[in-house]
Image (cartoon, rainbow, N blue to C red; front, side, top):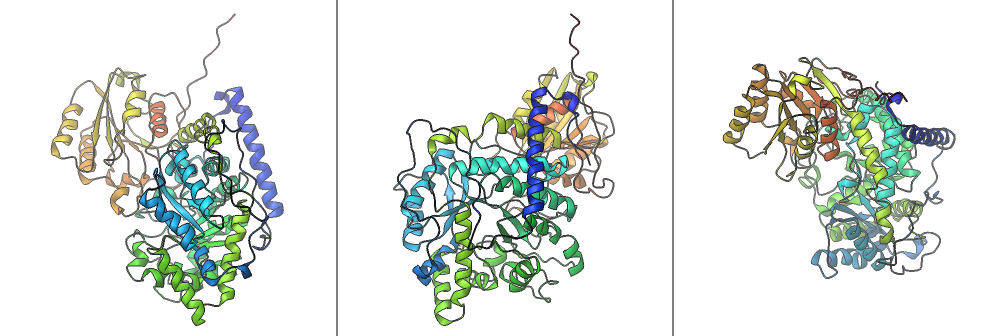
Length: 627
């Protein structure tokens, strides 16, 4: 597998940085080997390192005085059954700005105070200052500290505007460096903790061994179970060593499916031996690395459940017998969102929450009705259907996680310190470097990459993205102008009609066009199973131009599997993500200003096995003039 760029092309400063990072990872690996053999019992959690804090900037928006906290969680005997049940419920809140008298803010405050929920999972956010202020307000209002969670799989930018944007797990599989996975975890931890997030629902450790998977796809590190496990373990260590709780998901594996569990229940038909040797391998590695939580999958796995079609989230055989007893996991078991179609299509909000708790779940994520879920648990305990000891064990594990995050020592964050932690120059440079090294040149029959000198008079950039990505292709076109005389940008959307496609065809017929660069953004998106493919009209256009011998270069800004739709594409580059870093990296590769040496972490049947990747050298370092 390919590594990074040749060190001859690094500056001395970069060499020093890499050496420091390698030393940090080595220490983490040694520590893991020596100290991870036994998990800490929930009753005596080992605290995570305090997140690094920059010097406060003035007194603006410092956290208000918090309720006095004991040195540890309260005794369970001091809580009512209802208070315990509420601690296990984690509703969703939006990440946008809310005024103090906003209806949504008032509802969140009600959930924290009247219902007494144990925490929140936050959606896509705006300013990191808005997020931090919201979390501080909720923490002040709540009697017990709140555990704040977020999906930051591909970096802080997923939820924090201005946060660092990484290219995603499959890109890390393409660089094949554990150090990269560790560093992504480190940055997520530093930026997430700076705004008040304590638990990330990452890494995704699903093995993406089904090219038709509509929801995992590039969220996975790849299809080699051993390599997925190694990268996941490094990711977990990067998070843990910088103060963030981690989650391995989606147990017992969501990679070999062709159904989006947001819409319906996927069925994993593989036998037990295959599941044990493929799907469970990365979970074992993450557990050995000390992962704090495991998220269940809304998938049916008949091989583990005796032929039952029950979702893994609601199966005691999967969560208790397999995960806790079989794999020895002692941390938090978190359900995937209980408002997803695989659950709500068959179970009511109260029933789903209760069944998940009985199956072995500790955190009930996003039930459609938090109050109904709490009431159902209380009623089940009062009826004797759920033993109080079972409820206590989940609350104890939750309190242990909160203690590890330092929440019984300090709840709020210093808003004045955010600017020194979120989206910093160092983090952005790391993201650019990983993105550049993750590029994979799958094929280049006409030798178009990098663009020969004779093909630099005129280039067309044809970007395809959803309507929300208004800037798609802008960075690529702008960066190409540094080495191409004329660059024309065309944007296509899902609603683009025949006239838009005809405009591209007409421009492509010009005799002076040296390159037609297609930049399709196709990525797994909840509730939209077709988001991982490109429209038939776009595929037909690429195929038509390719068959006619046009100088077509496809740079996939997302799923590598779209090659199945465009088998005639003569040059195919995978950039993994639709962001400015990825577009800039593609431009650098096309202009021959950066090396290409990434390798596919998945296979693209029928002709491109795992490990495929053409190499293009970096430009020679300029020779200093003689004195």
